[in-house]
Length: 341
Ligand code: NAP
Image 1 (cartoon, rainbow, N blue to C red):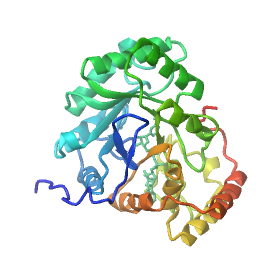
Image 2 (tube, protein in one colour):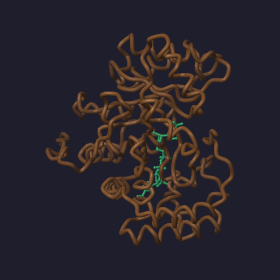
Image 3 (cartoon, helix red, strand yellow):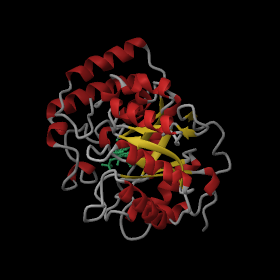
């Protein structure tokens, strides 16, 4: 049967936050399609995730050229499912920066790569334009002016409405925005950094600077890929978990007994707040008004539904925050791929 969106989806169940000082409002929770959206053709589970997300007020779906596996298949699958949603009610994001095809033009930040990649993404998604196009990572070997100029071209060509950057340091971010302002180009409106209770690098400089830079912040992996949920609290690796995927970016040190014991302490605070650990971790990311959206992943609708209710409990008492801080201060994790300062 054809999907009919829930008529009450804008009844206040999802708050929308302004992205920087742009005209764009984003849902406090965005659905990311890095995991669980690859493969050969959309599955019923993928459809259900997107339909129930939209019914829950999620209007923003985040992709990148290389999401799969195989790379590119998430854009194909999600693009097919999004055809069932009203195009003017959704924000579709994609990115380019990581390795997508072989040869010298298949990754990083050149004009050649970014614009070719965007064309490929549009074809896979079956869209004429994306709402947001990102430089997925800073390229130390390409002039920043060329990368930001390519984002400007994407907008001029009508292939993207807004632009963003991901995992740039604060200094690189300021430089990127300065270039756009000086040239009279489209100014990136959003930064997509890794941010969660277990990776707080943006709190030092990027997050406090964001309001004055008129920059929205969308926090990726706010659940630290599942560590900040009840998934690993029992001390074993459930077979249906990301940690068991060969080459998973969740590393053994992150799943040590000491870390799990500390996560249990966080879970006690979550229970006192009448939340699950996942809900508290999302509420915690959203406690700052400078965070526009928490960019989550979900394996199934049950996880998604649990996470959605986090948006209504983003207030923390001073005591809760200091208890959480004291636990987090004791958690020792190896430096992450996505630490930047
Ligand atoms: P995440 O929200 O930190 O982790 C999602 C995972 O946590 C799920 O796949 C699931 O793990 C587990 N989970 C979620 N809700 C749960 C619940 N209620 N109970 C138990 N487990 C739960 O985010 P992520 O999937 O790592 O990344 C989110 C998005 O960020 C990506 O889809 C992508 O759009 C974006 N991203 C961007 C970059 C970048 O460089 N810009 C990098 C990474 C990600 P299982 O699958 O194990 O069940």
